Length: 168
Ligand SMILES: Cc1cc2nc3c(=O)[nH]c(=O)nc-3n(C[C@H](O)[C@H](O)[C@H](O)COP(=O)(O)O)c2cc1C
Figure (cartoon, protein in one colour):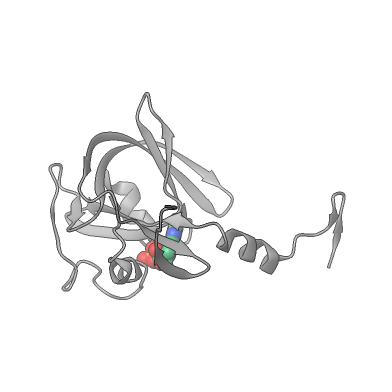
């Protein structure tokens, strides 16, 4: 292990294990690019600002979906419900048509695909993009928000999908 001014260098496995205990909600970012639906699963989604209404996610610079997503004039954030773990896995898988059966979706008001039976949809215009390390921070201006099933979020924790249980 190499030394730095702050002490021993960060162990990469320790770093990953620490991040993995941070439970996160799961979204699928979708867009239409050159007429083709594109999308990917993300846990890096976050609210950023209330006024203006801004949200963000980070996408891997190496993502093969990002070049198409970057070209789209808007994108949708599909907040997944607790019974949509298979859908989340599908939108993280390479080499398949993520929008083919059994995925159920419809065209949204501006054209971006909206996944069926999700907890909420947010439709966003690109607001800011910043390269940060090996990811790109994407900030979106929310133009439309629709809540469908708020009580059943899908969570991701230590490499597994799960459900939220509220304290009594
Ligand atoms: C639970 C989960 C969360 C993920 N979160 C992100 C994320 O926040 N940003 C990202 O770029 N990729 C994330 N990924 C990986 C992408 O969904 C996808 O696997 C990756 O983009 C590879 O596909 P692509 O090359 O077609 O983009 C996540 C995957 C899973 C299973």
